[in-house]
Each structure stands twice: as C-alpha cells, then as structure tokens.
Length: 376
Image 1 (tube, rainbow, N blue to C red):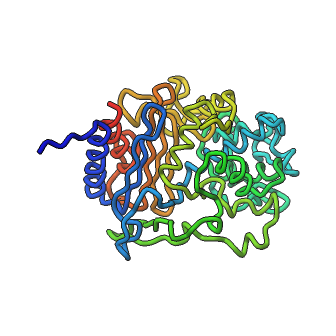
Image 2 (image 1 turned 90 degrees about the vertical axis):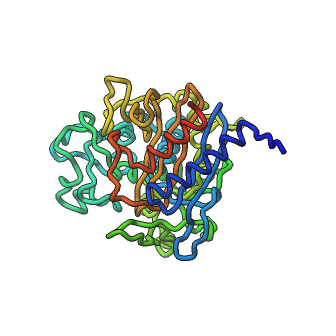
Image 3 (image 1 turned 90 degrees about the horizontal axis):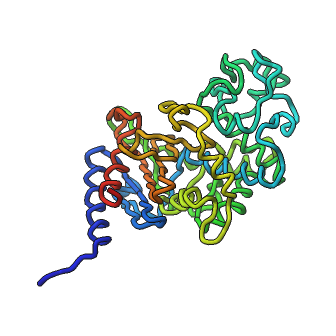
C-alpha cells in the first residue's frame, strides 16, 4: 500500500528524528524548538525530558526560564514608554531614578536609556546586579566596581545591571509593577502564556532546569524561585530586581516565537500593535559591537538584539541567546526572509566546548539542523 506524506509532514517527521539525534549527541536533558517559515510558525517540537527524576517527557507546552532573551521583553516595555513620550532615549536616567548615576571616573557624562539598552553605559556587573544600591554612593560609598574604566557611550560590555535598572525605569514611568506592566502590555496582547512572576503560572508546566557538574546533571530549583515573601513586601521602584528584568521570563518555545514574529512584522502581530515600526527599527539596528561582531560591518548589538553572520553560514540573523542555571536558549530570525528559530534546552553537557562561531552546540547545531530541513 502506498502512503502519501505531505511535504510539511515529511519535514516535521525529519525534524523530530534529527532533534532526538542531536539531544543524544549533545547529551542534553531536553530540547524544545519552534520554526518560523514564510512568516508563520510551521513546526514545534520537543524531545527528551521535562524531569529526569520522574522520566516525564518534555513537550512544547512546557515552560522554561529563558534567561537573557528576557531582555528583549524589557526593551520592548521601554520602547513602548518611549513611544508614549515618557522620556527621550538620550535622557539622563538619574532624572527618573531620583539620584545621580555616574561613572566616578567621568562624573560629568550622563548615563542614558540608549546606553543601557545597548550595553554601552560603562556599567559593570562586577559588584553584582541584584540591587541598584551598587550604583548609589549615598548607600554603597565607593561604586567604582560597578563601572568600567572607559567613558559612558564609548565602549561595550554586556551588563545585567543595566537591564535590571531598565526594569526599575519601566515601573517609574508606567506606575505599574514591572511584571504586571509586561503582562498587560506585551504578553497578553501577544496571546502568550508567560510571566516574570512565577506565582502567576502553573508550576506543573515548568521544565526542571539542570546544571552539569562533574559529569552529572543537578536540578536547579532556584531557577523558579517564587520570591513570594519579597513580593508581599514589595516596594515600587525599588524591589523590581526580584523579577529579574534581565533574565527572568518563563515561557514556552512556541510562545517565544511570537516575540520573534513581532520583530519580523514591524511591531504588529495578528492585528495588535505592540511597537511601532520605528521602534522595531531602532531595536534591530546595531549601535555597538557585540562580543563577536562589528558595527562597521552592519553587525553587532542594538537594543536587546544582536545581529550576527556567524550563526548560519550565508545568513545575517538577528536575535539573542540566554544561559542561566544550566538553561541554554536562542531566539533568532531573518526579518526580510521571514524565517526564524527558537531553541530551549533545560540542561546539557557543558564539557562540550563552544563551536568556532562562539555559540553553544545546543544553540547553533540545533538551529542549523532546523535551517537545513525547513529553510535551505
């Protein structure tokens, strides 16, 4: 008997098989992915385990903390408030915070929203980034450890402290708690099930995240720490960092693909405008060199989005990676050609070195495999 299989069905079946092959090759706990082709999600797949201890399989509806891809949501919130006329991107952030934020070596140079969004503020994570007190001489005294030696606006260093500061600025300008602002103005309009607040989500849908230590996978429950007691005593414009605007969003791979589609479609998805085309263009335009790329070549870091030609040979991709607690994630798209990829991995063998392009194997190998199947 002859069985006819559609082209799309054949590709999905091939992707299912290849995904499991890669999971085994890379010694990953689980992989959840989404593929965008012709401006729509054409494939979602998951393989491996949600939980190693119970052997529960991973599926596409399971949620993971996506680490630094969360920055794109914080940047989206900031750009919405910029569109509303709350501030100019080159304004001094100290005016809104109510205290001066200055590099002690360059006390006359203001630090701006644009600098925070592009990691060019000269801020450093050396003194930590879980409190903004490290920026305040009136509280900390010597704040020099929170700054680099170069002048604000003249150099690039990836900085989590800057995005936790941006989260606080979202609260100041909106008058809403950070997680709730993102929920009502970004996540709900996108129609996705996600939150920066663990307590708003069904915890049975969380995929356990595992670090890899001494050849063994170790569960990292703090990745989903609810911080309920801290929330009960929340202080607006001060407690924001407990939601980790720099890395704390929990979401599934298919729903994260909708964030990529917003960027692909100039800020609008399913008739809902999340950002204006002008804001999307600003976010995607590199203004500083990333760790691997050069602005002179049209590559580098914009606002919570990196443009790179190193992920897929022959393609210039825009997006972001994430890593925390053992989680590795990636969201990249090609705006003009209307394709993109999301990869979430809840733990992998980190003894396998990064590829020559600088990406983790679970990021670049999986994306390139999906590209070969669905795009090339």
